[in-house]
Image (tube, rainbow, N blue to C red; front, side):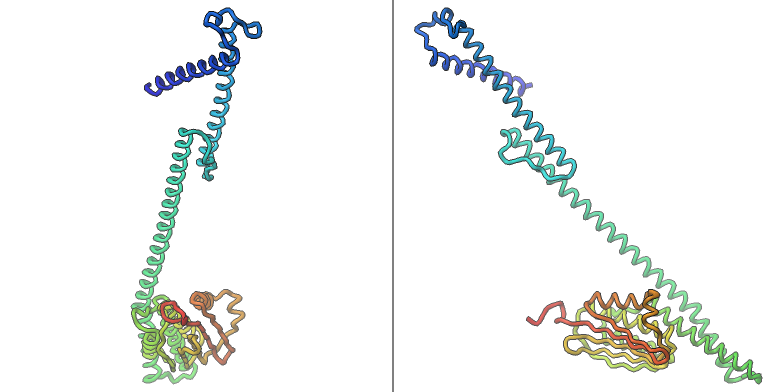
Length: 349
């Protein structure tokens, strides 16, 4: 209400001031000798006082129309700015457009735009965090389920296979059947049980791979090979050097070794396994070879071997390369080469 009264008073004051200006201009162009001539004199055959009123009315109407046109233009600009803001586009109002009120509206619109931008950033950040949390939770569930399956297989199937192997070995050694055909079949069954045990150990290694847990890569490999030597009838030879590389490289190389050993136990039917871990010319080299039955590398890759693909991805992730060479009935050799910098990702410069 106070604002409306103030606007009316300002309009009246502006009208009086404008009328005085018109009157002064008319007196300057058409001077009067005395005030009584205001009612008797004529300008272009129009009474003096009427001429002043008509001039004031026409001029005021023109200025009002011009002001209204400019105001309407400002309203259109503000409406367009609001539409741009709603549609997510940047505001385009110029710095010199409009008076103080329009400048204030422009500043408020820009402030609203900044708040909406910040709100969008916060929303996107929350969505990313929720997605990461879901992925992390899913990975934890997968790890827990793999560990549960590994425990159940070890406590049931693995133990039963071991018991069956012991029973078959006892039968074949202490009370072998006289029938050669039967004796051959029992020997085959014993070998099948032994092979099943190897595949079970490889499966357990794949389901529940051991982590380094603060050990160096050399120590982790030594412990893994020592455990295999106790459980698997496989001759293992190793040449391992102590390295000083980033934890990420150690972890990936250790996982590649586990995957390779798992494949050897499950498929190679090898009698010997050689593992080499050395560093030459700022390059870490991990080489795993066996004397097993080998396989056609290209054919396996074409069929999308998950194990080979996983090892290749791990090698590439640490900036290395993986090469697999296999000859049927002669064995398989897998080699990973990873260039190294100083520990922590620095350089020599």
